[in-house]
Length: 119
Image (cartoon, rainbow, N blue to C red):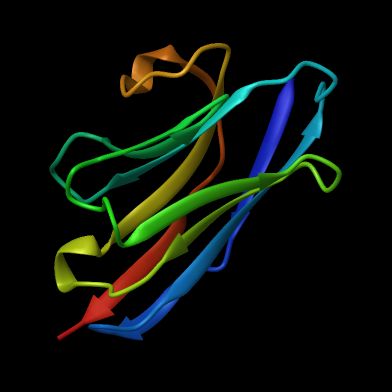
């Protein structure tokens, strides 16, 4: 089992920045691919970014968001710059055994952190 805890969400004005963190604990001896997803009420969970041997991003965040990991701290980060109101969502981190944009491939999920971008 792997436990994931997100932090760093909040309220920010359009054009601002936030950095989300996802701390992993439990069975972390296995190297997992780590992804970030987001969800707004009434919509499906949406892929944002993933980091394994390489990084991949959704088109909507390419060039504005950056995913990274600190293996020693067992933490994955999502740096979000030039935020837009459309980025408002609950952001979730997740762990999988292979890189995928499909949320169904991820076995472990955090509880989510709210990001609100005001115009």
